[in-house]
Image (cartoon, rainbow, N blue to C red; front, side, top):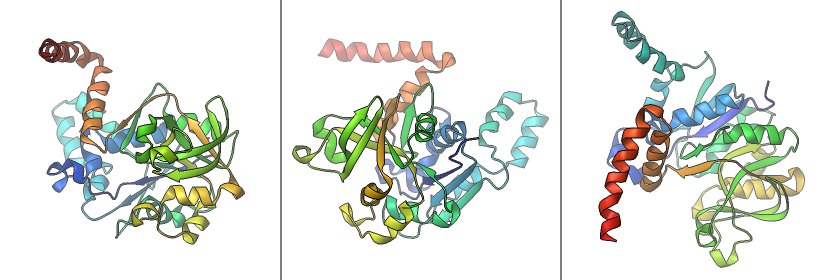
Length: 295
């Protein structure tokens, strides 16, 4: 049994970069090949041993609850028609009774605020936070890698990847004291610094393992960058007491909160599917040929 049993999924964002598609569909329900974004995050969490799933939602996100509910009429019709493969596809959406909780974030006050809303459900134990926008393609899930490392190195842990210095203004950045393999001991965190002021190029991406002391820090700090309650500010404020480690995961991260990243992820995950690989690969080659000739 994993020592990390609970995970928070902040899913209250409006997904404005995907309008008009997200006018009536939650961004997290947009399909990446044939599974919605939220399914990738939930599958990664389950593989890491998570047992309780806490979704911080907002108005208009009812489809998320429906997705993980039992569709009795649909299943009966598929059974009657002998659609065994379609029934098997629904297995991913099945969750144990009582495993899901939904908390409403009435105002978009930042990631730190969303996490703070889960305090009562988390209680006094370490927990994970997964941002579904960050889809990570890897043989072993990024959270599974982090849970194994956290068992040996307690305190707050954040997933990291190296980025070009010019891109540091788009991320929370670690101020690294020392490194050992995939682990980096932090002496500070800076939210979206100007490239010339960035203390490193070690960027935080959407996977966290946090100690329950984070809730005290979230209650103490005020708004940060963008006028929002920043999770990185709370982690930084707790650094001296709890410690912060960056974990450089093995895998490829796609920013599926952007159209560009979503399209790239769709192609990458589709090419991983044996039944799609050959035809899609040939199609991409054909598409690339005119562009190469024009160049």
